[in-house]
Image 1 (cartoon, one colour):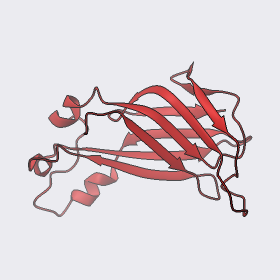
Image 2: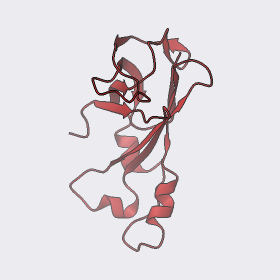
Image 3: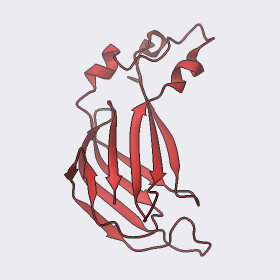
Length: 152
C-alpha cells in the first residue's frame, strides 16, 4: 500500500497550528535497521494576517535523535535507497480542517492548484459542530522531498 497515493489530513488546533509525522518503510524486511525508511515532518503555521497559512513538509531531523543510542536503527538519511525508490509516490489530496475562513487561493511552487471549501466551525471556536474543510486536490507533491502549500 505504500505505493498508493496519500491523503494528508491536517486538523488545526485552537491557535491555528498543526504538526505531524509520516514514517514509512517497506513493511517486509529489516531494511529500516540500515536506514531504509522515510520519515517526514509536517507543520502548519498560520498567516500573520488573514485566515490562511503555510503547510510545510520537511525531512524529520529529529528522527536522527530518536535513532541515536539504538544499536538496531541507523540514523535517518533522506537520500537512502528506499526513499529514492518511492520518490514517485504522490500526495493525492490534502484536507485542512478548522480554517477560520474560505481562502482566496491555494498555491504550490507558485502555481495555483484546485481546491474545494466546505463552511464550518473554525478550530478556535468553542461551539460544537462540523469543522470547516479545505480540500486541496492533486497538489503535485510527493511523500518524499520538501514542499510547501500556501493558503491565502
